[in-house]
Image (cartoon, rainbow, N blue to C red; front, side):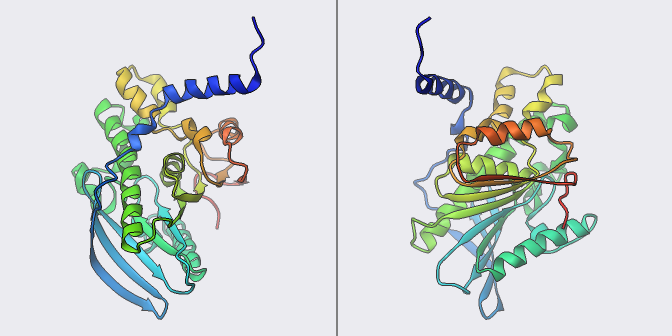
Length: 294
């Protein structure tokens, strides 16, 4: 066998991976500007304005919170993404049964505002004010390992692909509203929100950096071993599995993981981290499970 240069072998491997993963599932019609409706506006203090906005998303209305920060002149944006079964309220209005956890999220939100960041906090598809899209059934029952049926597994795939598209549409709107096509966005995501952040960082050049907290890196693909489902659905669920997008990460990434989290192994995390090409990357472990400490 003739010698194959290392760089050529690398491109062969990348081409094979590209053929297996369909990043087009996160594409949408970028030509239409979706004008939003500001349904609530409130001056929180002399330098902070809170807005609740609805906008036509990929396939339904998206409600989201918008915190406009006037502490600094530049518009630095961060998108906050909740976990499976949560909502945008988790970052703003702490409540039971996970009071301490949601209080931590509110602390993060408040700290970011005090540092001068503008914030976007949307509801993921089927969550919060969008629960009607799933006939008010709990979205946390959709993953294959819990639903154990193809119909709900397909809903989970739709949840992930549509939410990524919706966030990209929100970004379109803000760039249009502030007449700034160069506006960049950082993302902080918790659990499912972290998975969404990874998918966004692989598909949208406007993401400046991401912080992902305890993302289920190999799910839902990892859950499919016990099911004999259609090849089409299996492929679609692989297309929304974060670990398959490690080599596509475009911007700096910080992984905050729990040593006792049952959603992943250290080997899976190490493999993902190693494959991220971005040089500005960091992995931090906490002595915790799926809920990180204060």
